[in-house]
Image (cartoon, rainbow, N blue to C red; front, side, top):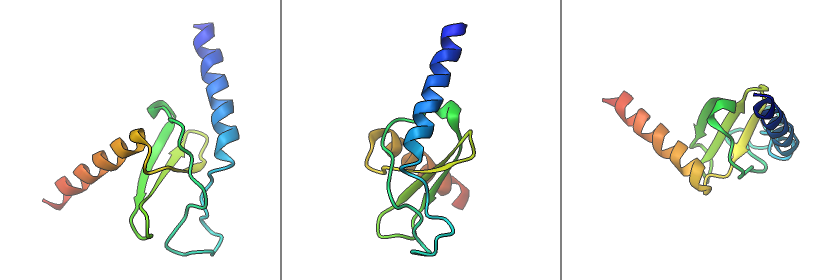
Length: 98
């Protein structure tokens, strides 16, 4: 049990450090339709994800994940694990349209 807590704590610390490099542009006024300046490609475990959002209003699709700390993170849409999120959300959107 103790090793799981330590591993989770280390993972959260590493995630937090990396997230500062991939935070969204929300509220900066740089491009109103686009929110991502940089992307983060390392895997974010589903237990740390509160919300997954797709932004199709830019030249390239943006995938924005809100993690358990409340930070919104732009993730690399070409990463294989992010492709799964895009596919899942596209399927869910298709089912809502029916």
